[in-house]
Length: 150
Image 1 (cartoon, rainbow, N blue to C red):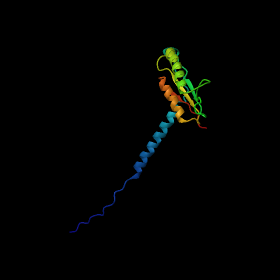
Image 2 (cartoon, one colour):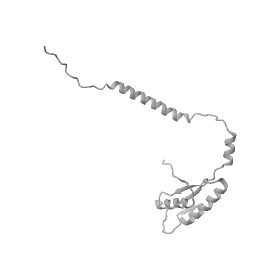
Image 3 (cartoon, helix red, strand yellow):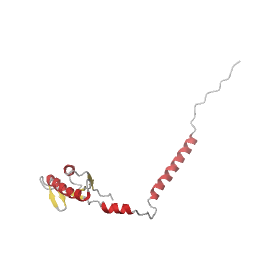
Image 4 (tube, rainbow, N blue to C red):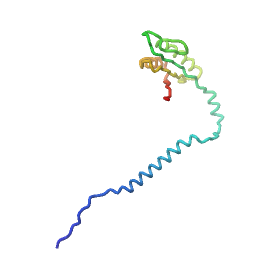
């Protein structure tokens, strides 16, 4: 007697459960993202801490040392300005050392920070020289200022 063998059907992947899972994940991430952005907008009256206030007053942070870097139009010109005084790399390093020493005496070690304001037309090597001057002055906290795009 002959036994009839049914034709084997190719395996199928049922897409409906996978679509359900993807939709649930999408909804979860949309809700979680929305909660994160709105939790900063909640107006709260936070409690005050007397100890935190005393610490903030006693550990008043020093203002950063601002270094302006202008493009060097002529070789040998003074591309670095602290305040209104122009200087070269050696002068910048000595000024940074002096100001860092004053800040360390008043606010403690590692309190000095430098904010670099570099002209967009200045060469990158000038910024490198200014960073080396900070390294010579043993200032580890350096910020490079940038303008927000409009």
